[in-house]
Amino acid sequence: MRKKKIGIFGCGQLARMLSLYGAHLGIEFLIYKHANIHEPPKIFGQIFNQTKNIKKDISTFCKLCDVVTFEHEHLTKEELHYFRMQKNVVPKLTYLELFQDRFLEKNFLNSLGIQTAPYKIINSKNSLLHTASEFGFNCILKKRIGGYDGKFQFHITSESDCMRHFSLIDNNDWIIEKFIPFKRELSIISVASETGKTKIHFYPMTLNEHQGGMLKSSEVVHTYRFEKQAKAIAKKIVRAFNYVGVLCVEFFELKDRLIVNEIAPRVHNTGHWSIEGASINQFEAHIRAIANIPIGKITLTKKYIKIYNLIGSIRNQNLIYPLPDVQIHDYNKSFRPRRKVGHITNATLVLSDFKKNDAIIKTIDL
Image (cartoon, rainbow, N blue to C red; front, top):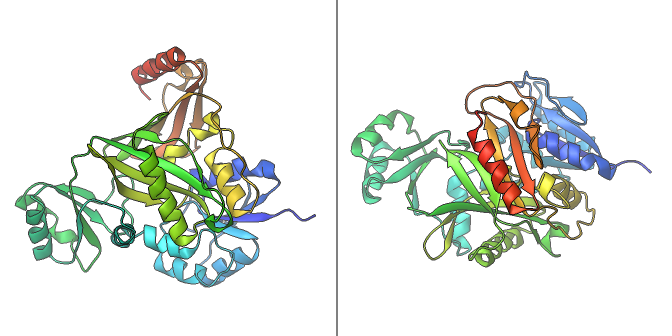
């Protein structure tokens, strides 16, 4: 019987882990590599090299695969246009178009009765000044499309801050959000197959710590008072579009509730702990969902679990290797500032072991 072939658009660490942890299912992978990616991808599968003919590339790529999925939602308008012509793309292009645009995403969430921070579109210098003033000069200016990991996001606290960013404002490419004095940031990852009509599986929520707009660490939370609300919100989003695959919802925790920060229609950094900590990790779960392979019950294999991102470089890993129940994941990427190049997982069955590892990891200059 012919093996099923899955195409992955993008060739970064998420594509690497999707192909790695989906390979044992007897699936072959074809990885779409953009022409501007000069670093050889460290991928478990065949490489499809982009040419100057994007329309032909996408058509050929999809024809070679049974199913095509994405490692990120940041497609160009041209790529979205040509993928829209294909019938074997999961999740549907509707989700990617919606969730790559912060303005459309928040409109969609609010239409479902899901609360976000107050926001407005910015299309002129005057609208920036007026809205920033309306929001009490405590707000975040964000690019509508792109700008992940803190890029193209600016905290506005004064009129002079607005003036400093006037040169960025052209047409409707920006939104401004009122700053919400949240207590903590958390996220939940769901996975659904068969157009979301069957059971939606959830991973435990994670408590996320950011530094400079980038995720620094994620720790699994076992009991959380707003978990029921988080699951209800994620389920509402999945069911609204009959979503298939893994989806991550990021939250701000307020005093009495959660509000949604952002959505990622794909596998997510805050779910990397599932490689060591779950019976089926998020990467395999996504592949199972889009390939229509039964997912089954997802359970924890460890009790106390936390990941630490390695940003910019990896140093002193020889101090990490001897630690029991600790693993380093090196993405084999060249080092540069503000680039995720790997992560560490601390996953134990005993709390004292977890705390000991955590204390040691925090003292090491990574």
